[in-house]
Image 1 (tube, rainbow, N blue to C red):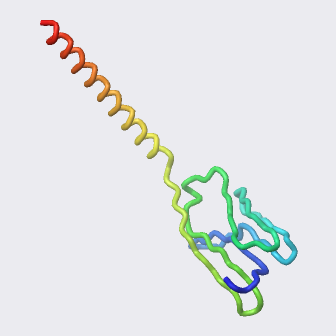
Image 2: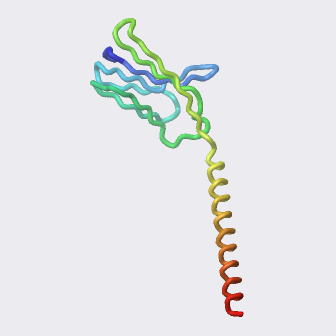
Length: 123
């Protein structure tokens, strides 16, 4: 972007509505949050060359399309849409349990081979 950004707005897009999450007026260096029932944090300062929307403690319900709109002088606007996918944490727990179970079986197998080797060596 080569033109000065005056305002940045983050929104969550849904099939039946658009939720405004944060608006940042860069000319004033002020950030305005919405009535969206979820805590959102965004950076806002004059001379900003990037924007970040932070959502603490995301859950699967936070998945969806998010739109960031940049407004400059009249006719100088840009919009970026991104998809956020949050998987349920149980999937990760199952993966960890599988790895731990496999490691335990491997350890038992190594102990068995070592025991058999010692027994056969002493014969």
